[in-house]
Image (cartoon, rainbow over all chains, first blue to last red; front, side, top):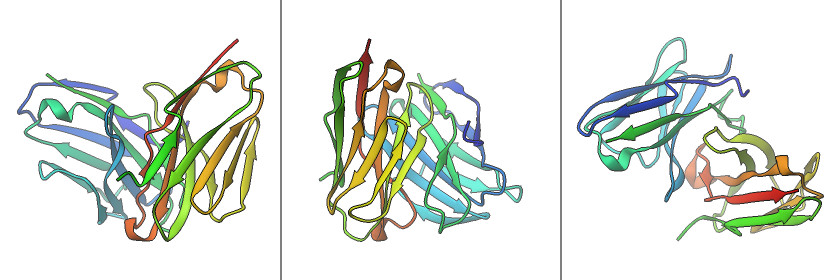
Length: 113
Length: 111
């Protein structure tokens, strides 16, 4: 158990809908990363937040957004969902930018029908 | 062009049959190379971080090594419970703090 929690575990929704994925980092960790894992693309970095501020962006679509709250939990919002958005979504946390090892949560499996 | 390439894509071993997984990278300004283990439907589990060429790390039957452009994950006398997908990732200057992952090697160990 990495100490990172994610809810829900599974999510099934229809095209065009909007969903919110939630992540709680390890106790004391300030940095949260979101990744998408699909069969053909592997694990792809989406976005990073550090202590409430957006720190880095990767291959994140404009339909996707995220935020980190004062209690350090983070939410990833996915809107106007398409079939191709079906994937595993992971968050990971580290203590600081100088802490290189990222610890991953169990993931949320999103299925868009 | 992929920045991180792992080979082979899949590897089948008999219990006790040692082998190596390869991770090659094309990025410059490496800040760290990471190995993770991922079981089906689960999150990646951190195994090792390597920072510089010549560095080695060991954990049970696993040993990771790093050269200037590749890393190897050696598995000695594997057991069925070592079956998983092994992911390699790099952190480098231009990518900031994000990890760039390879597509993984799926290892199956049969008894």
